Length: 180
Image (cartoon, rainbow, N blue to C red; front, side):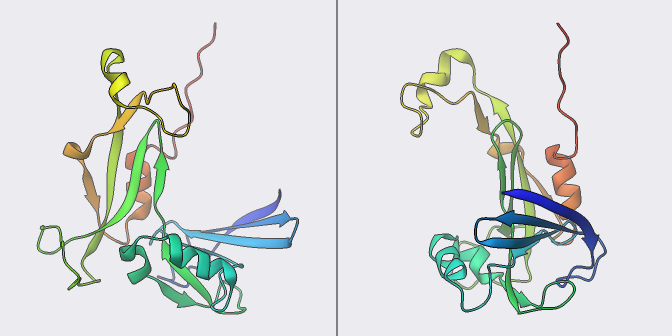
Protein backbone atom coordinates (compact mmCIF):
# COMPACT_ATOMS: atom_id res chain seq x y z
CA UNK A 1 0.00 0.00 0.00
CA UNK A 2 1.41 3.38 -1.00
CA UNK A 3 0.20 6.69 0.40
CA UNK A 4 -0.64 9.08 -2.43
CA UNK A 5 -1.48 12.19 -0.44
CA UNK A 6 -3.34 13.74 2.46
CA UNK A 7 -5.14 16.97 3.25
CA UNK A 8 -7.72 18.55 5.53
CA UNK A 9 -11.32 18.72 4.27
CA UNK A 10 -14.74 19.61 5.75
CA UNK A 11 -16.35 16.83 7.74
CA UNK A 12 -19.75 15.51 6.65
CA UNK A 13 -20.46 14.68 10.31
CA UNK A 14 -20.04 18.12 11.92
CA UNK A 15 -18.83 20.39 9.09
CA UNK A 16 -15.55 21.15 10.87
CA UNK A 17 -12.55 21.81 8.67
CA UNK A 18 -10.42 19.35 10.64
CA UNK A 19 -11.26 16.14 8.76
CA UNK A 20 -8.05 14.38 7.74
CA UNK A 21 -8.27 12.78 4.28
CA UNK A 22 -5.65 10.28 3.08
CA UNK A 23 -5.41 8.55 -0.27
CA UNK A 24 -3.69 5.19 -0.71
CA UNK A 25 -2.86 2.98 -3.66
CA UNK A 26 -3.75 -0.64 -2.82
CA UNK A 27 -3.78 -3.80 -4.92
CA UNK A 28 -7.54 -3.27 -5.38
CA UNK A 29 -7.11 0.37 -6.46
CA UNK A 30 -7.15 3.81 -4.84
CA UNK A 31 -8.78 4.03 -1.40
CA UNK A 32 -9.54 7.28 0.42
CA UNK A 33 -9.88 7.36 4.20
CA UNK A 34 -11.20 10.08 6.49
CA UNK A 35 -10.87 10.76 10.20
CA UNK A 36 -12.71 13.80 11.54
CA UNK A 37 -10.56 15.18 14.34
CA UNK A 38 -13.56 17.05 15.80
CA UNK A 39 -16.17 14.26 15.93
CA UNK A 40 -13.83 11.23 15.82
CA UNK A 41 -15.87 9.63 13.04
CA UNK A 42 -14.08 7.72 10.30
CA UNK A 43 -14.88 6.11 6.96
CA UNK A 44 -13.25 5.05 3.72
CA UNK A 45 -14.30 4.53 0.11
CA UNK A 46 -14.83 0.78 0.66
CA UNK A 47 -17.67 1.47 3.14
CA UNK A 48 -20.47 1.91 0.59
CA UNK A 49 -23.89 0.91 1.92
CA UNK A 50 -24.06 -2.32 -0.12
CA UNK A 51 -20.39 -3.34 0.25
CA UNK A 52 -18.86 -6.50 1.62
CA UNK A 53 -16.53 -4.27 3.71
CA UNK A 54 -19.51 -2.76 5.51
CA UNK A 55 -21.08 -6.20 6.10
CA UNK A 56 -17.81 -7.46 7.64
CA UNK A 57 -17.45 -4.31 9.76
CA UNK A 58 -20.98 -4.72 11.11
CA UNK A 59 -20.23 -8.34 12.08
CA UNK A 60 -17.09 -7.38 14.02
CA UNK A 61 -18.06 -4.05 15.58
CA UNK A 62 -19.35 -3.33 19.09
CA UNK A 63 -23.08 -2.57 19.35
CA UNK A 64 -22.57 1.00 20.58
CA UNK A 65 -20.38 1.86 17.59
CA UNK A 66 -22.92 0.30 15.23
CA UNK A 67 -25.71 2.29 16.93
CA UNK A 68 -23.76 5.54 16.48
CA UNK A 69 -23.24 4.95 12.75
CA UNK A 70 -24.09 7.78 10.37
CA UNK A 71 -24.41 7.61 6.57
CA UNK A 72 -23.10 10.56 4.53
CA UNK A 73 -21.59 11.48 1.19
CA UNK A 74 -17.82 11.81 1.53
CA UNK A 75 -16.10 15.20 1.31
CA UNK A 76 -16.05 16.23 -2.34
CA UNK A 77 -19.13 14.12 -3.12
CA UNK A 78 -19.62 10.55 -4.23
CA UNK A 79 -21.50 7.46 -3.14
CA UNK A 80 -22.94 7.55 0.41
CA UNK A 81 -20.65 5.85 2.95
CA UNK A 82 -21.13 4.46 6.45
CA UNK A 83 -19.26 6.49 9.08
CA UNK A 84 -18.45 5.18 12.56
CA UNK A 85 -16.84 6.66 15.69
CA UNK A 86 -13.29 5.37 15.89
CA UNK A 87 -11.72 3.40 18.72
CA UNK A 88 -7.96 3.68 19.07
CA UNK A 89 -5.66 1.46 21.09
CA UNK A 90 -2.00 2.33 21.48
CA UNK A 91 -0.55 -0.37 23.78
CA UNK A 92 2.16 1.87 25.23
CA UNK A 93 -0.05 4.97 25.57
CA UNK A 94 -3.67 3.89 26.13
CA UNK A 95 -7.07 3.92 24.44
CA UNK A 96 -9.77 6.27 23.19
CA UNK A 97 -13.28 4.90 22.74
CA UNK A 98 -16.90 6.09 22.69
CA UNK A 99 -18.80 5.39 25.89
CA UNK A 100 -22.52 5.80 26.65
CA UNK A 101 -23.22 8.28 29.46
CA UNK A 102 -26.49 9.20 31.13
CA UNK A 103 -26.42 11.94 33.74
CA UNK A 104 -22.83 10.96 34.54
CA UNK A 105 -23.82 7.31 34.97
CA UNK A 106 -22.87 4.61 32.51
CA UNK A 107 -25.87 3.15 30.63
CA UNK A 108 -25.89 -0.64 30.91
CA UNK A 109 -29.07 -1.58 29.06
CA UNK A 110 -30.51 -1.54 25.55
CA UNK A 111 -32.52 1.65 26.18
CA UNK A 112 -29.49 3.66 25.11
CA UNK A 113 -29.97 7.39 24.51
CA UNK A 114 -27.50 7.85 21.67
CA UNK A 115 -27.10 11.60 22.17
CA UNK A 116 -25.58 10.87 25.55
CA UNK A 117 -22.13 9.54 24.88
CA UNK A 118 -18.60 10.84 25.31
CA UNK A 119 -15.05 10.02 24.33
CA UNK A 120 -13.26 8.14 27.08
CA UNK A 121 -9.48 8.14 27.40
CA UNK A 122 -7.63 5.61 29.52
CA UNK A 123 -3.87 5.65 29.76
CA UNK A 124 -1.52 2.70 29.78
CA UNK A 125 0.40 2.19 33.00
CA UNK A 126 3.40 -0.08 33.50
CA UNK A 127 2.88 -3.49 35.03
CA UNK A 128 5.59 -4.16 37.64
CA UNK A 129 8.03 -6.78 36.35
CA UNK A 130 7.15 -9.22 39.16
CA UNK A 131 3.43 -9.06 38.16
CA UNK A 132 3.82 -9.37 34.37
CA UNK A 133 3.42 -13.17 34.46
CA UNK A 134 -0.24 -12.55 35.43
CA UNK A 135 -0.75 -10.87 32.03
CA UNK A 136 0.18 -13.32 29.23
CA UNK A 137 -0.01 -12.06 25.64
CA UNK A 138 -2.26 -14.60 23.86
CA UNK A 139 -0.93 -13.55 20.44
CA UNK A 140 2.70 -14.22 21.46
CA UNK A 141 2.93 -17.34 23.67
CA UNK A 142 5.65 -17.07 26.28
CA UNK A 143 5.55 -13.28 26.38
CA UNK A 144 3.75 -11.00 28.79
CA UNK A 145 2.20 -7.55 28.61
CA UNK A 146 4.32 -4.74 30.04
CA UNK A 147 1.43 -2.25 30.32
CA UNK A 148 -2.23 -2.36 31.29
CA UNK A 149 -5.06 0.14 30.93
CA UNK A 150 -5.69 2.34 33.97
CA UNK A 151 -9.49 2.09 34.10
CA UNK A 152 -9.59 3.80 37.52
CA UNK A 153 -8.31 7.13 36.21
CA UNK A 154 -10.20 7.62 32.98
CA UNK A 155 -11.02 11.01 31.47
CA UNK A 156 -14.08 11.88 29.41
CA UNK A 157 -14.47 14.42 26.63
CA UNK A 158 -17.49 15.84 24.81
CA UNK A 159 -18.45 13.97 21.63
CA UNK A 160 -17.18 16.90 19.50
CA UNK A 161 -13.84 17.07 21.33
CA UNK A 162 -12.10 14.05 19.83
CA UNK A 163 -8.91 16.05 19.19
CA UNK A 164 -8.73 16.97 22.89
CA UNK A 165 -9.09 13.28 23.77
CA UNK A 166 -6.35 12.36 21.27
CA UNK A 167 -4.09 15.04 22.73
CA UNK A 168 -4.75 13.74 26.26
CA UNK A 169 -3.66 10.30 25.09
CA UNK A 170 -0.47 11.77 23.63
CA UNK A 171 -1.18 10.97 19.99
CA UNK A 172 0.46 14.19 18.81
CA UNK A 173 3.67 14.01 20.83
CA UNK A 174 6.83 12.97 19.07
CA UNK A 175 8.45 9.81 20.41
CA UNK A 176 11.39 10.49 22.68
CA UNK A 177 14.59 8.97 21.38
CA UNK A 178 17.63 8.45 23.51
CA UNK A 179 21.05 9.27 22.19
CA UNK A 180 23.66 6.79 23.31
